Image (cartoon, rainbow, N blue to C red; front, side):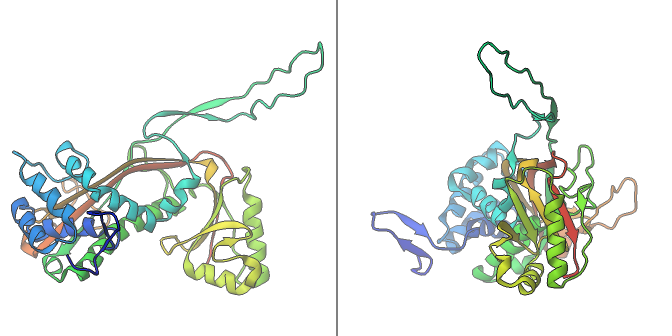
Length: 360
């Protein structure tokens, strides 16, 4: 083991890896890709070349000893079993959350189970009152509705050139992590914040900004920005206990330059926390997480194939109903990585989200 990749603790036999988070995940994908799905070959490569991430070889060894191995996913018993104890799926999911706006916003949202009836109060609530001696207690009523979070999944297929997987390990590690996890994070964040994304029953939830209050930007001077941000705050009609700004890095820098120290950026803006990410559309979003419900199965499905035939299109069509161009991964000398997550969100409180499209 190379000294720069591991740090030994004072306790005997305890080894902590200092490799970047997600390294085991990217190396698992690389091993499978180089071997084009052959588990024995992938395991041999991992044992010979990936010794600083032994969980990769251990996972592949367990898979390759199965009597029959189906298409590789992290959600069925054959594949999820090995991934769980070795922490590879958890590592990938943790890194994905860290890269995404949704992952940073998640602690401020109302967490509910997927596809379960959830009561949501729509009335004013029962607030009660003081009761004098021999006086009756006030009777109040409220109202509830039932909300069911849909069972949605978000996925992406990323083709990788076989040559990439044959490059030196450190370079390919970074590329695979950035391409697969970074691409998935960006797509999920766009689905979360793009005002044009309406929900499709049984397929996708609406974005939290779809149908939300929109503020029109008046400009980029200090006075105009102050006026616009004040209008956004005024547009929030919920209590605002979990208000959070979301914006691109350039937008944040423009606001900070215009308002100076009074802005509180980059950590806060007018005393409210800020999530800065270029995954955001060209807009500023102000969201009260207590008015948004969120569901996450906690599962991360990853599968690798070098023998599939794909439509290389961001909006694939049904081949049975339209003319399509299909590409053979085998013929193109490519390997495809498919990543899936099961999650959903819904804005349940009117006035809990306000957004403003900006050009800065």
